[in-house]
Image (tube, rainbow, N blue to C red; front, side):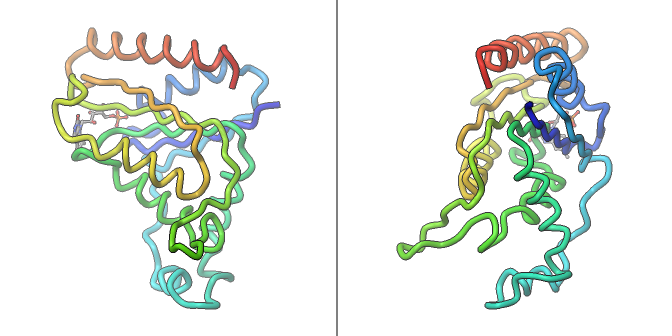
Amino acid sequence: MTRALLLGFSPHGKAAQTFKLARALLRDLVPHATVTERDYGGQALPPLTREYANALTTAGGLSGKATALSEQLIVELEACDLLILCTPVHNFTVPAALKAWIDHVVRIQRSFTVNAQLAKVGLLEDRRTFVLVSSGNARKGHEPDFLTPYMTAILATVGIESVDFVYLPAMVRGEEAVNRALEQAHRQLSLTISSGL
Ligand SMILES: Cc1cc2nc3c(=O)[nH]c(=O)nc-3n(C[C@H](O)[C@H](O)[C@H](O)COP(=O)(O)O)c2cc1C
């Protein structure tokens, strides 16, 4: 059975179009999946503590209370075989809510390590991942996109390489544009998901 983890990073929380679309697709296309939902846009993760920063940058300081939340988030990630990240573009890149999740999950000697050539190597298993990206901008290529290369690189850092991006553009341009974006994204995701996860 598919175990899906649906994470939202919009300030609109579970009312965000990407989150609602992901929910509907899971319900229609993977009806037997067990779904865990988290809304980190509406209910932000706490800022990093000094103890956590020290734990990540001090030899031997990698366990215990300082890393408890990070551990919880990584265990939840490890437990899924379908990961869906729903995120808006904020100022050309990921919103702070998503960056906070990344800073808790990308942890040295837990979700990645560093090899003899000083390259970062992922320690998590790869899993099917969709990143649903909502933006105000109407056209891809019209402004810098730091979100796509960043998310590709950071997910690969922990070992997640099977990533599809689904874009919902022009979401501030009225109902017609929103409906068009939703239909297009729905079609793209339906085709990918129903041809096998
Ligand atoms: C702080 C902030 C910054 C934004 N920056 C961008 C941007 O750089 N490019 C863009 O296309 N849209 C930008 N937008 C518009 C959002 O990406 C757009 O409204 C999106 O559909 C919001 O999705 P959501 O409802 O899932 O939060 C920004 C919105 C906010 C609130």
